[in-house]
Length: 172
View 1 (cartoon, rainbow, N blue to C red):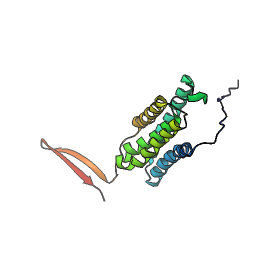
View 2: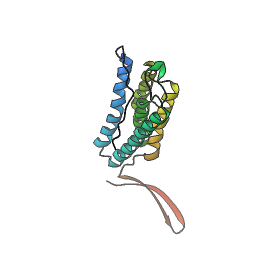
View 3: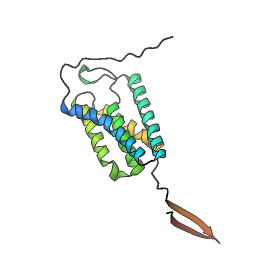
View 4: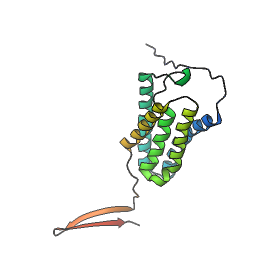
């Protein structure tokens, strides 16, 4: 038995706008940058957490697109809900936020927000598609990601003769 996946293709009569092209670039830049950061930091646990979240995000986005099959605005094709560009960029931005802290995620969130805007501007999606993409992307991160802990810094807890001790341990 042979199964073929057929995607609804459509012709674009005009060239993409600069905003749409920049959003397409953000779609690739965010996940590649996040993966690169985890590899340069030698954060194997973070790399694995990002990968699991990324794969879940892509699977959920695909399943929702195919099962709901919402048409795109202005008859530009099908499979609009949720926005894959938005879910991918917000998954990467929220991973940085959850794993390394908010201040490091600000540029990624800016790119994710611009990418979402570019999908609206190009009339590929409506607001519900964008919102759903952000929820799927962020939700995929929240399931697998925990805060990055430096291996040489540890919170300690102990008891001695009924007294409780709380402290930090730093290993050189």
